[in-house]
Image (cartoon, rainbow, N blue to C red):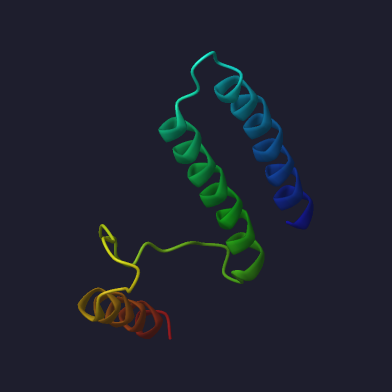
Length: 92
């Protein structure tokens, strides 16, 4: 599993470097596209790290929402926590 995770990280970084170079080398680089791509690459790398930490070898989407402020709304946090509890109880 560790070798697969490292291979995924190298592929993400390699392909990401090529894509980033193409975005930056344009005569008029689009900053929005560059920032969006960097965010996507960071997300993919975070997923590979989640693979390392997760013992059951699965990822469960508990909740999703559009975050508009720095602070996570309490309602959204409680929704995710309740769903996590449901999943843990179902597998206990």
